[in-house]
Length: 513
Image 1: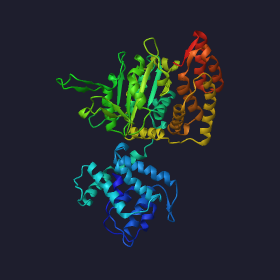
Image 2: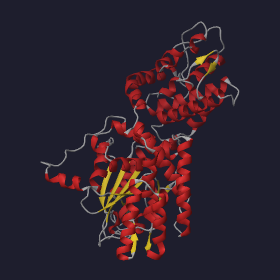
Image 3: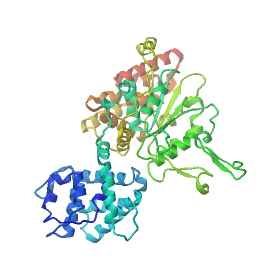
Image 4: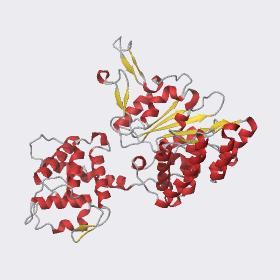
């Protein structure tokens, strides 16, 4: 709604535009005040242009007719903020709003000459759409001012709440203690880096518990009281995607036919309806069935970002159109038990996930004997925290870079050596791995804050992205493990390589899981 405040028709009077150039007018309340004034002695063009400049440069200092700071980044980020506010965070519905906001940004950036008639059209376009979204009584062609006053009242009532949400950040030191363990930290960082994580380990080690408790911590109920997470036990009979996405039943509804929805499909629908909220799908014992048989649709859609990322379902929806957008706010977590009842993952699956092996220490396991009762349910996060988590994740997925050039060079050097050794045995990684390692390190940089350690993050990525794909007999990977041992000096990777080498000596075959 605040975007509309830039675009209001003006009444009242001020003597000149000089007050508009003061830092104090860059506050949010300025936009409400500016809606009630009309310049005297300056042109309407100059007045609106000044408003435009100030809005897109909020947070920068205006001095001697110039703005200081990273203006290009500033106005671009504000376009995203405006679109998110006006579209409830859903860029897929931006449409003409994108064009309108880009016009003001391009004027400010000097890419376009200011044209009052175009600016007036753009501001009325956005204003009328915002009014319609808020359910305010207004018909095209009516005087827009009364409706805009109602919008101002709504904005004023929600301003303190909106401000606190925008300022909230997502960092590890602000989370409950149970999410600050090494395993939890790696899990959360992996989610921020890519919305597909596999938790592997023996049965009963707590894999499902951590994924469920983190989802409950970020729980948000929709208008129907439904949560933003779902835990689904995978069955051995999941031989196709009907258990995941449902199917059209031609004999349902008295022979008329109807689409049989699943809990997972309904979660996807809710995620699409609430794009500013993170949604979590937890697939418990994911490898009780062949993953590729029931999950291949998800594997391909996870790699695609954009409006054209549609799931095709025959017979689904109004008129059987059968097209459902894959939500960009859906996080998928799979827990994996390693025993004789399960199936191993193919390289195709492992290459698309961060694989975290969960092995509690002796002290952690034995501590259960002293516990009087199970840990209480985790308290739900404060308002705005789930949205902050999703915003950080999307920034990282879209290529935000927070690390220094020195850190980037160090990563390049380490993974360059790994690539040379892996290539000799046909296990070299591709561009996807490079991109996801970069995203993970950036996620760690932001999540860990002042506790960020590059070496630790690189070590975690070696053991989560590179080593999981290694498997073979002594002839195939024996020398490779020895070479990797010399390169990988991190705590996690060196221990895991030693374990795989020992297993290779004992049974003549080794794999990560």
